[in-house]
Each structure stands twice: as structure tokens, then as C-alpha cells.
Image (cartoon, rainbow, N blue to C red; front, side, top):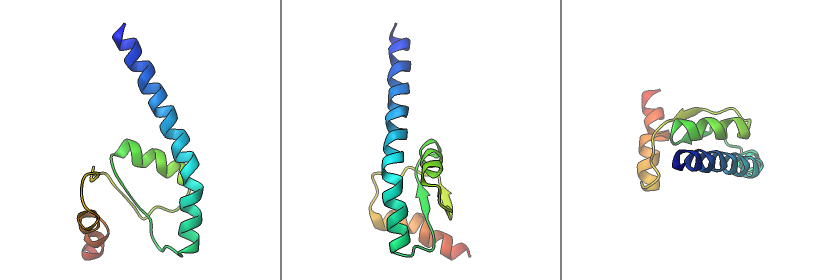
Length: 88
């Protein structure tokens, strides 16, 4: 049935996503250490930021559950990092 195929596809997609997070997390941890990052913000849909946060295994300053994928870097920063600084 199509529901069964969809379920199998979604399971494969989640498994691939978890493998990808696991593969890029060390690179980001090393970069954060070399650059002496003081904070890490994860931006995206909750189901994605939560999964990546677990793999990253770093102190996360904030998880911002907005889908800003199609936005410019300036827009993302204005809605996240700069917005957090204004609130402080």
C-alpha cells in the first residue's frame, strides 16, 4: 500500500538525516573550538534542531524553531542572534 511505502520512505529519511548529523557534528564542534565560539544557535524546525542538538553534544545557547531556509543571512541574524541581544 502507498501508506506502507510512505512510512518506509520516512524511516529511511530520518535514518539518513541522523547519519548526516552524526557526520557533520564533529566538524562543527572542532570549528567552534578553533574559533572560540561563545554561543551556538540552532535555527530550524523543532524536529531538526532537536535531532542535531543531540548529535552536536555542545551547550546550545538557544534553539529557535523557525524555518528560515529561504531567507538571507542578514534576515536570519536579525531574527535570531541580534534579536536575542536586543532582549537582553
